Image (cartoon, rainbow, N blue to C red; front, side, top):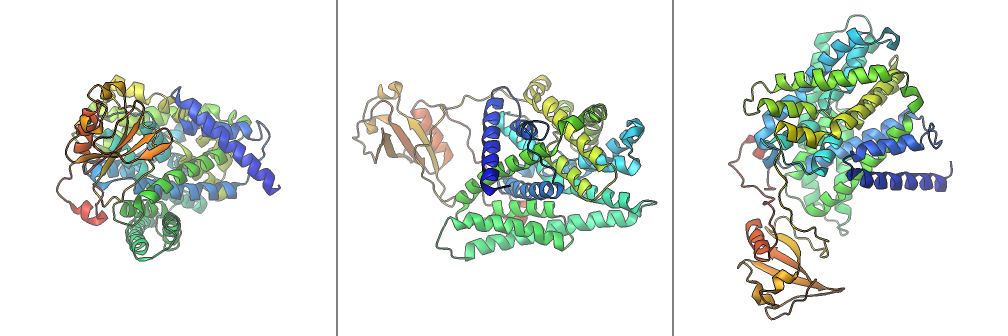
Length: 517
């Protein structure tokens, strides 16, 4: 295939996926489901793009997932996860284990014999689907703007970001057991699991600290290279941990947490860079997986796939959630039901199924099709109904009155070390009733209008500056509370402060060097 033709196909695929995601958001359809759909539409059973390279698909999925996990850690503030750390970790470890064992045991008794999976095969199939997908959970919870009670949102986001390592260890464990045949050595299996998680956690923390030190000490003339340096560091963490026999997925997530909760130069530009990288990784991953599947082959396993989907949605996932949250009485019965419903599957189970195919596991092609079908059912049934279920269970709050959407006319940024808050506002007729000069607006003492955009021109105002209808103002304050007062003074509904009051430091603050609050 010529390079030019390959670039043409990739650009059309990406463009179609972005348009599909934009259109789907209006109807409450998860964008990631549509990315998969675009891949299937352009695949061999659709418009005829033939793609069946398992090795390439596994490579794309692994690289994309490592970038997504690092970015998830980078954007997670320790202050946000501190109140839900214990239940989140319990769901990400014990919950994954219970989901895999319960689902595998049930499947062994209900799957038709023509599927050809024994007990270990059923446990391996269940392990591939035992974790919730971080890309799906983040995309749906944040995209739909759900305001959940009782810290449910950080609980779900922490679980989805931290449970992939446990699921990956289980997948590798059951692959080894299937390949061994005969009687497995459970003692060595449990020891391998514990060692991988321990080495991965320590390696992630050490490599994360080393990456922060390197970024701060190295002096690069071109500032745009700093985000690329951090990206290269994340890939190094993933690969190096693999070679020291640790869990790479856990290491890269913890490294992201360490870096995201430390001070380093060009922090804002690095986070913006990783936002783009994350979406690129998700697009690439879901498109590749969509191209890999042949919809005609799903007909052979649709019955088993639907049965497994409903077993996981209504039996094994609720069982895992209720058992994992027994020590935490702050979660009500309705809270636990909602957490059970947010058991979204996504690209990660499909990548794990590809790992099984690459390892030459018997009937791995059937497992891949079942996992793909279960992912589609999960995104359709659970992903599209989250707001409805949240309202029905009474765990969501009414949406806040939002201030008018801003166009980001002022591309100005400040280092995070400077405790500042900025916002934009458009001059309306109601504002001008108080007076047309800047001094008539009576802003709080510590808030300034530092720039005005009128048409295509920018200028710095003074107190005597005459403002016109439609002028756009950039406001600067030294804290969020002052900024909210300024917005209220201008007649714009304020939003809650982005930065919560920081409670006393605990061991997790010291471990991750929490400096972002």
